[in-house]
Image 1: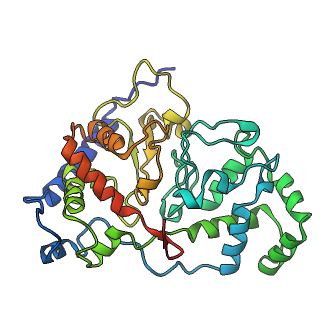
Image 2: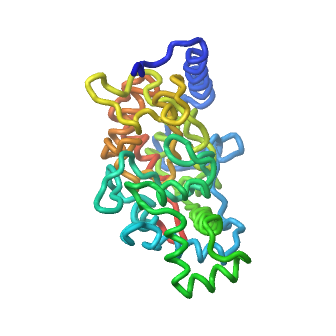
Image 3: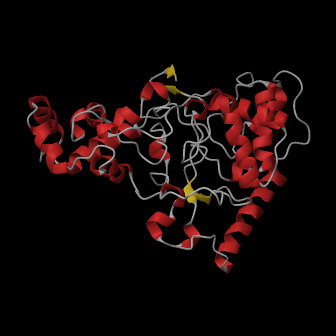
Length: 344
């Protein structure tokens, strides 16, 4: 099958559009002078509504707490898998940044998946779910691992049968859902819990709210570089990403000719079969990024320093200096937030 990058006029427009957007951000935000002194009132010039990154709300989302509690129980429920060994929390560990720190996650019978597990934290802010965006909502996303033969290897008939044998589930579902234990209600409860997994109050959020001592001069310089180089064109908003698709290797090819492509490498193409979607992925959000190694869809990059260098080369067409990489990484480490009022 010919999977070479398309060269149609529409593809060229997409590339040129991305380059233009990057240039516009660079023009708008490139620093004329980086700070060399401790934080001072001049930082306040950034703490305004023009910033492309916005802090997460400090108040928890307005959710049905009964559904949140039930969803949390289901999120940790091994019965969702065929052999009762895998739960959602197996791959999305809340005490490890919402991931499992593995290149590929392990499913039933020790099987390995073919793509890196994204964090579940702040997933409610994503405009689509999964790396290739095949699920439009968190509810739809729940269907994926439950029915995937490599992950949980089950089906809703089997799952419902197991849960119905547990009196505590029968009582809890009946108190919230008039029709009791159904696939739709299981999906709804888990998705509601996942929407509660926001991580506000990172040091950078505090800085955006006006605390000029929340970040160091090096971290501030890294933010300026993050904007100036154009990283901000894909990573912005409250989740610092998660709100658009982008090709991996837009400026320089990422996928090597001597490396066989997997279905996961194909990105959106695996769903649409449109060549213009080859290697196009949902841009991940960067909140808590310091906790979610290894990086990229293939889990091939173990450190932040390496992934920043790779993004510079393949997404921006720039060979980033070591000092700039160090400062950008320092900024990225300020994006670690809190969950349940405690630092992650």
